[in-house]
Length: 112
Image 1 (cartoon, rainbow, N blue to C red):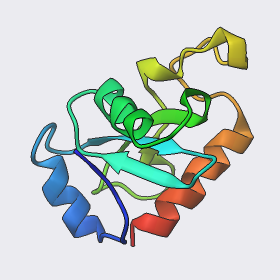
Image 2 (image 1 turned 90 degrees about the horizontal axis):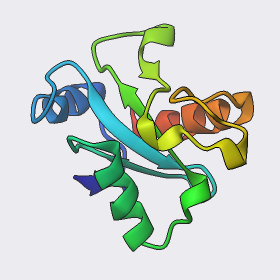
Image 3 (image 1 turned 90 degrees about the vertical axis):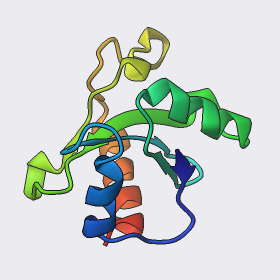
């Protein structure tokens, strides 16, 4: 479990995915601070890591990355931590296109 401070390659991401699910890795992004935490069995653990490091809960969104996939299949915007009726997100899926885009940009910044 870590918060990325430098870029990693897709190959390194694939190696990290091997620690838990093999073909997929769980991630949480702080869309306000531009942070990316990854490599845990639960999104909630990554959420806690970011909260303990100064993030605000309303800025944290969970998703999965599949290192071997390309295009739209690379990011899956699905996590239990995303269920937030108070933020107009009553689903595990991230519904706000602006949040999705922010996550895509954060992933693009850290995964090369």
